[in-house]
Image 1: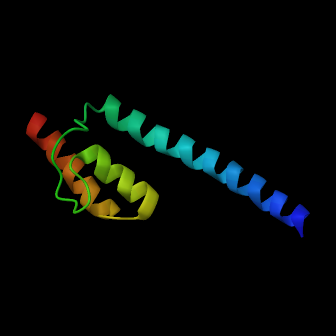
Image 2: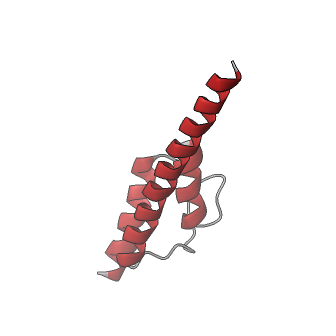
Length: 79
């Protein structure tokens, strides 16, 4: 049984590393687009876009479509 727990822990750690890498790519891409992470957001549990992105990635809150609309709104204002 303890061997199985060790395998599960290693699997969880491996998956967390992949999730961290994916999150880094999201933020890096948005930064290269000039997105203001401190911009206000309509997300309920977030004060700024950075918090809203984090809440979506970690908990699925606010929704991908809503985030895309807010990001697109920033890009439209800059154009």
